[in-house]
Amino acid sequence: MERTQKIRLVIAGFCAGAVNGLLGAGGGMILVPLLIVLCRLPEEAVFPTSVAIMLPVCFVSLLCSDAPMPPMQLLLPCLAGSALGGLIAGKIKIPTIWLHRILGIFILWGGIRQLCG
Image 1 (cartoon, helix red, strand yellow):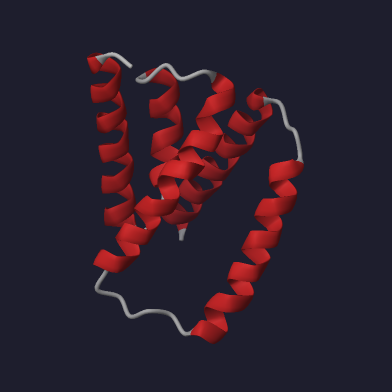
Image 2: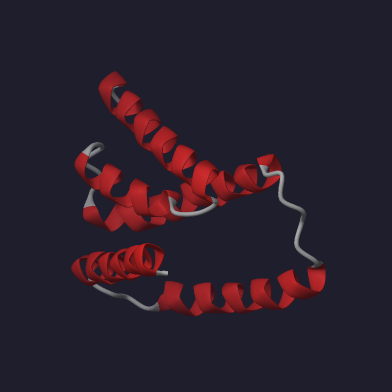
């Protein structure tokens, strides 16, 4: 991997980590477009790369947060459902263009909720 590509990846990771750390979430929404535009990753590599990067970023954000740890009786059922949903969704093959559209819809929906609520 060439030096400029490594620098671009570091910049993309920094932006995702900063957004995730500041807002508690959303780093992946920044990371996906940056991996496509800035880092020029192939479309089929963007989403798996983003997920693999965001897992440790979310963990670090949680450890650095001043917020109290949620109770296990809240976390465990949600983690079980998330793991099952991730397993099922990970097996579904959706064309990349539709993944972009779905992500865009969720970003717009979240933005509208934040602006109006």
